[in-house]
Image 1 (cartoon, rainbow, N blue to C red):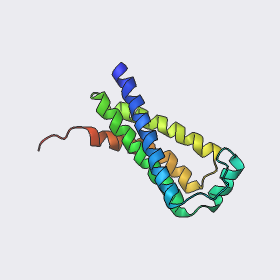
Image 2: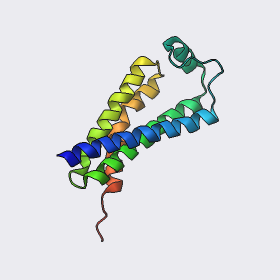
Image 3: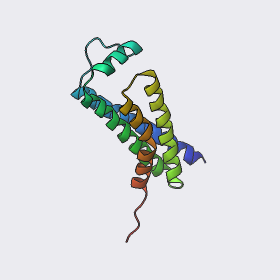
Image 4: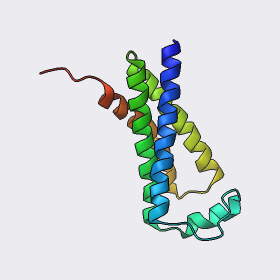
Length: 135
């Protein structure tokens, strides 16, 4: 039981770190405008209406990479019930992403992908972590 809890925690931490890293790379490619107030919802809403599509795609790629990483890390730590813990880690990332989607206005396509990506991506990460059987 403890191993399962720790594996979910490890997966979520790894996923959040990867999301932050990939989003940071996206910010390097598509820098936010000067004077952006990140803690001001109106400022963020204005930004979302102005940023290029590439910057939005970078965010969605970050979400997918983070979810795959979360599933992979959770499955590797768990050893058993690896798919279950990966999906729990993906579900937690889904909730965290949902909070972002609610607090910051995103285009509809980003909202849909933000809801649809985390669980299948976490499952894919668990599949990547599972040992392959020799054929």
